[in-house]
Length: 176
Image 1 (cartoon, rainbow, N blue to C red):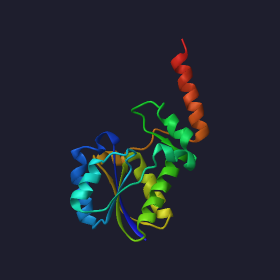
Image 2: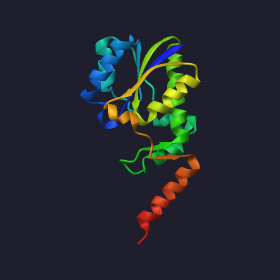
Image 3: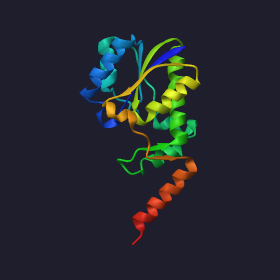
């Protein structure tokens, strides 16, 4: 059984030096043996460099766009790019699929140990619940900055609701 430490942040600050202290403290404080990160880019992240410096294995866990079709979330993930910036929107299906994908990738990498997961702050509570439902142990969940922990999605959209939401956004944009 894996034990999880989940740290959420905004993607705008995830790849900055702001990540160094919370990641380092979590690794040392929880004797983490793997750092897993929601980082949907093929280039190195700041956290991956930090993991290398700390001699901790690193795993990029987010599916790349070429994986979305096989996971059945391609349409939703592409539609996400049309959503207004600055809104805390959760795509209930796509985000749940991605969170389970992350855990499957971690479980395929190791079956017993302490894992630090770095992800977007809106995933923290949902991922924590999924960890426990899958039989994992949740050691800690937090965010940096700390005030992000209490943020919840302002809108949660199913695939059908996403279509309707985008249709209404288009009507508003194109109405006189």
